[in-house]
Length: 372
Image (tube, helix red, strand yellow):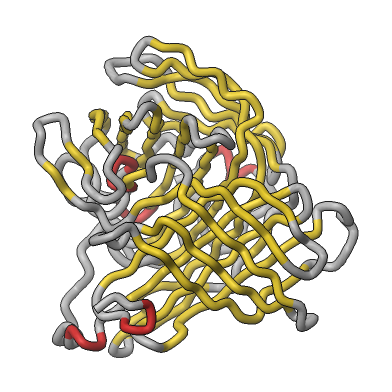
């Protein structure tokens, strides 16, 4: 089916733009934006994704303020409208790779407003993600990350919230990932519990001196993935500082797998060492509120067909570091949460303090981190 994008000169396949290069139903293309008031007063996240082979656009908007997380989740049929709009949510690309307008229109939900997200540093590509399980490709995707700031205004349950130069980050990813649109097929027995431990750490941050991202994944005692890039903010034209190694240590809140402090000791390509300490700053975002990790009222997560138009919203209590309380009083403990952090950088003449966003997922048997 022809559309407006087909009248550009940027085709990369001998087909129309409504057709992606794989029939895998998990193929996706997704924006994710975040912003945090540097003192931890409030944090927000905004996401919008397309699943061409599922004929779905979905998105979410959350604001955490006063210990409560306000959630808005939306979904619609993709065709014939190829625009970054879904229900009351839309993303306007004002200046590619730098400036975006994020809009949540007023409706029967507890938060709405208009924000401008602006990159303060160029975007950074991650190493490609690729893995196979028993001969089947389970992930093959690309992502880039960017540090920025966010300004605008929000209405939160009738209270005006001014967003004035909040610290921000974003990513844009596309390709094939597990648990998008369809359940993963069963192709063999699950791993034994003793070898099923998984750790994923993803830190975005900036200080006055240095900024960037570091991402580490481990399966048991084995490193599964590492990517990271830092920039000296005082020397914009200086070479990028690629991370060649990173060791993570964590101090958990007693009786939980939510961190109080996490330290990422990095080694740079030139041999220098930079240590990044992340201290939890206010409540973390429960990512199910955005639709991730089995989110939505039906529990089926991202990329699922929910009809021509679908909107749902709720408000949760997130004052506890681990437990999330629903409006009906039920309690759950989502594995996937993203924590605003205060960041302290030390080493390589890059000492400084600033703000960041850190994901830390630790499941199963991880004796190296004291998690058994």
